[in-house]
Image 1 (tube, rainbow, N blue to C red):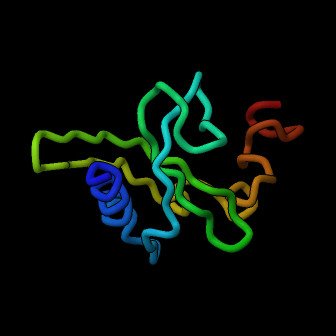
Image 2: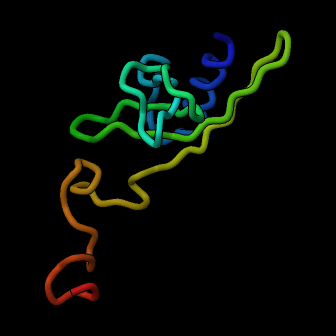
Length: 107
């Protein structure tokens, strides 16, 4: 339990561009390359599933959780989609500019 608490805290600190709370984050394990739907039956590495902002998809962040005796620690790799994607892409639609468009660099 302390490991998951540390993981949620790490996810909040890794995403300062969001106003996250503990309720916005679920710690799960990956199962065969996808997030386990029931929240914990996977055998893969842990991830933080971060609730998407209004109209946006949820985000998955890689985690590392460790504990020894009374101590628990966690590291989260944060990512700000606004730096890499357009609004349409964050909502699950749209095409990356220049990719797959007729007459663009890819087509």
